[in-house]
Structure formats: C-alpha cells, structure tokens
Length: 365
Ligand code: KG4
Ligand code: ZN
Image 1 (cartoon, rainbow, N blue to C red):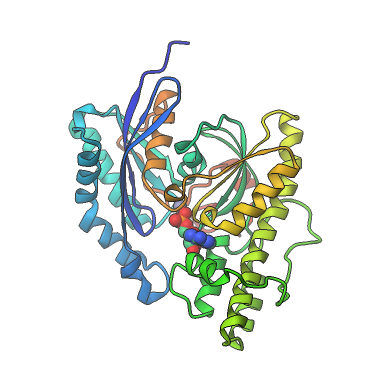
Image 2 (spheres, rainbow, N blue to C red; image 1 turned 30 degrees about the horizontal axis):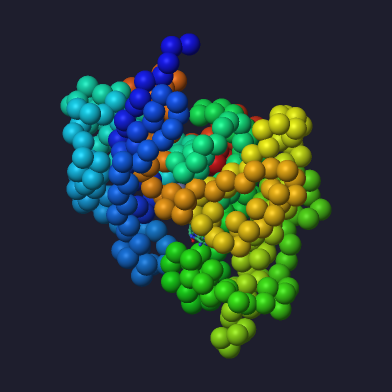
C-alpha cells in the first residue's frame, strides 16, 4: 500500500445547537493535530424554551456560519488553498441546521476544487477520542449524548455494528428532563452534576430499567418519571443534592451495566485482544459516568478512553477528523450529498431491529 499523505481538513458542524468549524491535520502515521476548533453556542437563545427550537437553531446557524468558518481558518493560520478537503455534517440532526453547514461545505469545495466528505455526526463522536490520544481500531464504543445512546463495535470509519440502543430517551435527554423538573437550567447535565457533588446517592431509591431483559438496550423513561415525581416534593438543599446524586448514580449504573453486557458480545467477536473501551458524546463529560466506566474497564482488563472535555459535546474537530480518515481511505462524496434528519451508523441493524417504531423516513438511530 502506498503511504497515506498528510491531510489538512476543514470540518463544519451544524446539526444541533452549536455552530462549529475546525481545521485538523492528520499525518501519514495517523497522528492528529487540532489546528483550530471554534464553537459558537446557541444555548442562550434556546434556554428560555428549556430545549432546542429547530427554527431558531437554523436561523442562528445562518447568521454565524461564515464568521465561524473564517475564524477557524484564521486561528489555524491557513488559507483555503492549504486544505486537502472539506468535511461537513450531513446528518442525523435538525435538518434545517444540517443544510446550513452542508451547503457552506459544498460551496467551499466547489469554489476551491476540494473533495467534499459528508460526515455522519455519530461517526464524528465515534472518532472524537482519537483527537486526544492514539486509539487503534477496533474498540467498543458507548456513545452517550443528548440525542443518542448506543453501544457500538467500531472496526473503523464506515464499519460500525450496533450492539444496543435506547428504546426511549437518550441518557443526555434524561439528565436534561430531570434537571428541568428540579428547576435547573438547560442543558441540565452540567448543573445536575454540580448539584450532586457531595450528595448521598443511596438516600432515594430509583427504578432500574430492563433488568429482566437480555441484550444491551437502554431505557430511561421510568427513571425520568420517578425522579420528576420525587423532585416535586424535594425543596430542602440537602435533599436536592441527594436526589441529584441518586439520579446521576442511576444513569451511570445503567450505562455501566449495559456496557458490561456489551463487553461479552464484543469479546465473542474479537477474542481476548483489542480490549479497548471508549466513551463519547456530551454525557462522557460527566465525572461519575467516567469513574463507573473506568472501574468496569479495569475489572474487565480493558483500557479506558474518553475524549478531552472540549470534544465530548458537539464540535467540528471530530467532524474534520472523521472526514480526514475517510479521505485517507478514498471515501469522497458528490456535491449532490443530501442532508439527512435520520442516519443510523449501522443502517442494517437499525432497519432489522428498530428500537423506535420506524417513522416515515426510516429508522431513526
Ligand atoms: O453531544 P452533545 O453536545 O449533543 C448531542 O449530540 O446530543 O450532548 C449534549 C448532552 C446534553 O443532554 C447535556 O445535558 C449532556 O450532553 N451533558 C452532560 C454533561 N455535559 C453535557 N450530562 C451529564 N454530565 C455532564 N457533565
Ligand atoms: Zn452530538
């Protein structure tokens, strides 16, 4: 095989409530350097509504996308002629926003004669830990964000097998909704983690989901309802701290239990080698989740990897890296690439075993 060239790629991310652009350089030996990573958050615009409003998100992306891309190029100290390609998130996500970033990527690719890579946002999260450390494929991935909660066997870009997924809410969604019921601001994960500090996680008993059911699927709706009901009667600061600790502990415990089951499935496929566990997505920023997964990995003889904190929540460096890895394999998309609201990483598994009833547009995730 001929040696892979060094690739410098501009990444663009607009699938939810962050407008982001980044330049990443991937050397021929696979080492990665983030030359710039700019994230313009819309959280303040959505906060009064307690969640992301799609129409507000799309408009806000249009307003800042040019400036964010310009800032990423300036911070990297590069011009468009220094790039080897452009990578833009093409889904899954809020389609009005996805179209903004994808169109910007297409325009730059067309104007500069650069190859375009239409990146799956989930693949971005899947490679995000590789922004901070060398982690070889394959690895077992727990992807936990506001919109997704999945366990995946990742053999490389474009080669993921889904081992489990949530049948209702994502873990981040559970953090957000319970935090809202407790009167905490959106997004609820970080303030709930701060409130839980020093709390007693055993004071309140919360339901454990799907205990009798085999497999690696998740469910958070029972926990959400029970915690929201408890929150109504809990006003004393110590009680609130203990409830937050119980919620955080229950979410971390479920994530760890299902990951434990997935380890067995992963090992059947890969044998005893390649014992690598990676967590990614916004919830990967949570200290208790990291502690619980670290303990599990250690007891199972796995190494444990999490992205640097800045690359847990949505960013464009992970999109640029997924694009660079695809470009290195010759995987390029046409300018007719479409924005997709739904785009499962393991499309075959999502269609064969939909955890959500498939909607008009096919399996969600
Ligand atoms: O990956 P991300 O930025 O967006 C999606 O692709 O969904 O994840 C956002 C989610 C939100 O639900 C937020 O509450 C959660 O990640 N999150 C956290 C923490 N930081 C962010 N959840 C728990 N603890 C945290 N420290
Ligand atoms: Zn995300």
